[in-house]
Length: 172
Image 1: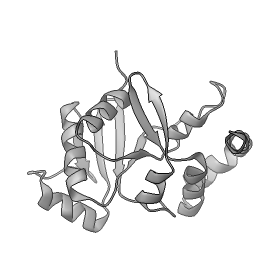
Image 2: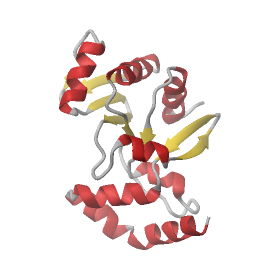
Image 3: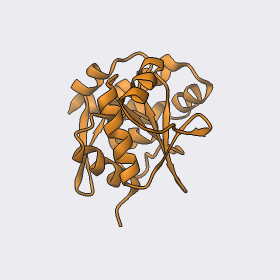
């Protein structure tokens, strides 16, 4: 059985959606081994400020059975270019959920614009699908720039493991 991330990524690729994973859980793609695992309750997909791309992303989410939310309410319908333009204009977060799955569809990454992250992304393979992931350094720098309590806690708790991963990447 395919993982939710692989299913969604496959649907995103089929619709030519540009996205990059940028969250704590996504740093696991950079891990040395199973002993270095960062836990999180969601996945963060960073999207460009492109209404058409966002509409295709929403279509992919719906195609794999995810419900779309804006704050605490279902995302309005029709989920068309007009709505996507409003979401992009406000840099609003959309959530794609199922019973035990949560994907944050974000148009913002603290300290970075999409094109820089896209150009320097790394691609990992999960099942039979390519997964674009932000460079670990970008994830760390963004968490630092965001300055949220949960980000500071993550950085402090995993400082040694993150430094080891960054060192290894510098050698590769």
